Amino acid sequence: MTESTFHTESPLFYHSFKGRLIMKTRIIQLLTGLSVLLTGHGALAQNENPYAGFKVPPLDVSSETPYSHEYVEILGSKIAYIDVGEGDPILFLHGQPTSSYLWRNVMPHLEGQARLIAPDNIGFGKSDQPRLDYTFGDHYRYFEAFVNRLKLKNITLVVHDWGSGLGLHYAAQNPDNVKAIVTMESIVAPLIPAKSYDDMPAELGNFFRTVRDPQKGRKLLIEDNFFVEGALPGFIVRPLAEQAHNVYRAPFKTEQSRIQVNQWPNEMPIGGQPAATDRIVREYNAFLENTNIPWLFLYATPGALNPPEAAEYWAARARNIETVYIGHGLHYVQEDQPFAIGRAIADFYRRLEQ
Image (cartoon, rainbow, N blue to C red):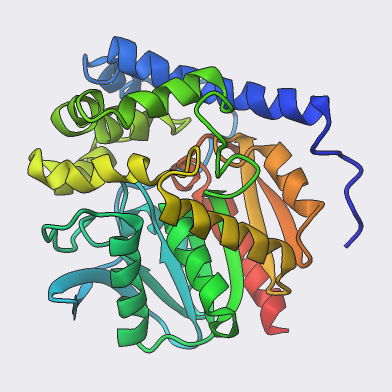
């Protein structure tokens, strides 16, 4: 791989990357302060046609899913998962606060090429919600046990958000069982781990200070259900259809059911804490720099965790990486660009098989 001429340590990279993150955290600040979606303005936006006047409007992002779930008992709880097709497994891993439903418009592009598996993380989607602390370690125990129970071999990991934390940790620990890696809006360098709140863009640092505060964070994420009602639709470019939003809402109807949603932001490694997660993310960042496992890095503009500058960062470091631009999107890119994502993965996987 030829080293990129874009120097990620330069002031240009720093200010551009920081500027994009500030823009995203201002969206968070807006949603938090004004409760745009909670006061009904989100519903109004969903009734408007943002593509009026387009000669060829974008393809419809369907709220329907063609998939049903199977269930397997893992560590005394039921894990729901989609399982279709035959061959080597492609394992789709979601994050916060979503479920396997996130992949409904991506997976059809891979049908016929492999066995497609998409679990609902413990506590999310249709999986059980046992009384756990829902730390990274808790999630990983269930995920690893799920992989072992299904006896998955030669896995291609397709990961997003905290699904990337789980999947990339697994890859670093089990490289001989990983065929390929596909990431999008993932928890990786150069943003994560963060040295401190102050080392992050100001609004982002303040956001994490708030949500990690035992009182303020609980009100925002558990009582107000902010991640589901605010952050989720707020980090999708197009209006999120009410039908789709209701699917995402379904697992979190009570305060008790939102404990796991509250915990994930507290697992984000900032200032070395939590120490276990900080170590894990650093280790898999180092693994990504040194592995020869084929890696497809998908990115959008403006993006959130992985803007175009992050693609440049990794293109200059990883040994066996392809970067593919998927179009306009924020964080939940599967709700904005599922067709570009699905086709990019299908093309990548086809090349692996040649």
